[in-house]
Image: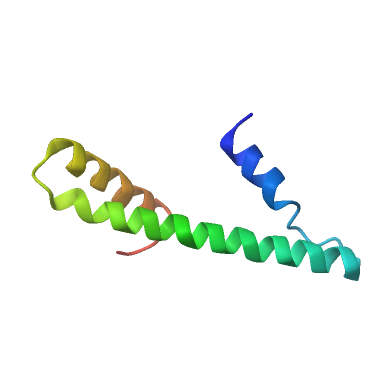
Length: 76
């Protein structure tokens, strides 16, 4: 099982289906998903700061995180 599948199962369905009670539960799941994404972006941003480091492994991680943010259209 992939990490995405695990997270999706933990959070639950997020797409509304047009039924008020179920959509309220799904909206709560959507809020959890949004909070998770926000935390992950903060992590990427923090690591991206290492792209200017001299140590190869830190610079490599920083550049990778910076590119991931760029690919998402997020400016540092």
